[in-house]
Length: 297
Image (cartoon, rainbow, N blue to C red):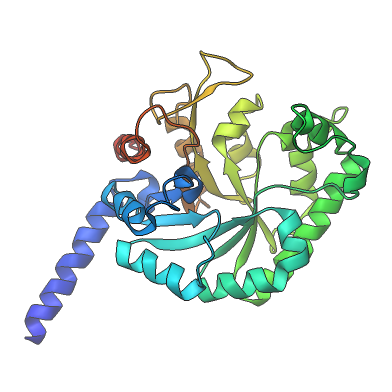
């Protein structure tokens, strides 16, 4: 019996090793659960099983649907998934940090990631959130001092996360590349955060949307960028408001990006993310997974 069990474990280990080799850099295929934000509330368990069946083994949370950490973690385990990271906007982290870290630790997260920054003084923004011009006004309201203030908050949060055995990270959109004079805010964040306390999760899709190069950023900051968001846009339809697309069906070639990540040598996770769909979400995410499996780097 012991021999049989041992043989089974060995076979499983070999299978998993072969399976991992199917994806870039031998890392597990991850999914940002924001991709299925509409499906999860309707069928939480079924959606997770569909994600697993499509080839994903890791996920990054974008909300917990009022579930306890124990129940959320058990649902992941049942579906054959592991939740390794979670997203939180800064205006949620600052007033609730201890609760967030406690929940994240119970869940077994490796990373607590800030998904969006805050203004040092939010009252200076006079545009209502429901105003069509809100986002543009919000981005334009940021000063270099605001970005330095954000970096200071990240260092403090990073110190607390590290004390709890987790790593704090920051995820970009396009605001980080909206120049203030000649200053690129992303550079300010890199220069003003402690590498021991703050890592970066580069969203390649938003970097491209902002007119910058993920390859150049990986080359410039090889040790700071340790996670990627992998998404595609059809930039042929519009450069200002392009449609989301399945990987390989849009405009972004991920081969040179992963080659740069391989050269940098510090990538620990990547998460596919698709925010809009023209076909059923799980069908689209399967296309995304197949693209990643075919991406030989």
